[in-house]
Image (cartoon, rainbow, N blue to C red):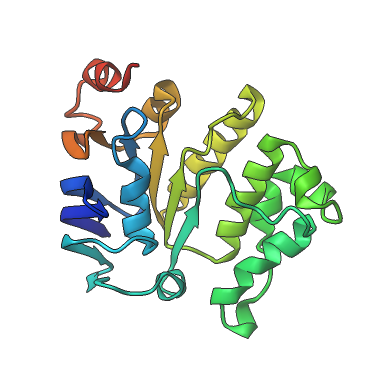
Length: 231
């Protein structure tokens, strides 16, 4: 279980997060929603260790992450699919996937079959350079790369941004499958409300760096969520 408790985060003098709290449980998807610039990506960076927090506490599987380095969080089972995908454009699909080996023991350095079961196009394009793939295919590659690390916590920052509808459906089916395995917790940042609504077990809605709606899908009015993220 991931627990974020009363986290503050700053960029210089600007405060991006104000006493933010949320949770993510194994076998569930927590959706973090909000308009642009409200702190969603800052929260993801805090969870994966890309940005230090000024106050509060983040724990994973009972351990306080504190100022744990990003690579140590990866070794602890935390995988990140960043906004904008950030694949390596000059490496092949296979080489991109193999970069996920870095946090694994040598005995476990193999690409799981489920990566190609979830995203068959990756198997067909193993020798293609990442930069030659479409935006949607690059997003599938970014998720596949995260799955190579065998995560127990999967953090995704706006995976549907700029993606064609058919691949959005593929990503949704993949996340439903991963949740159904019951072996990982998933944190999903989204602006596409209908996609989030269909997947969410738990909502955390941010506005101006603060949590304004928090709760399980059974306790939260989806129309209230939609109103908070409408532009």
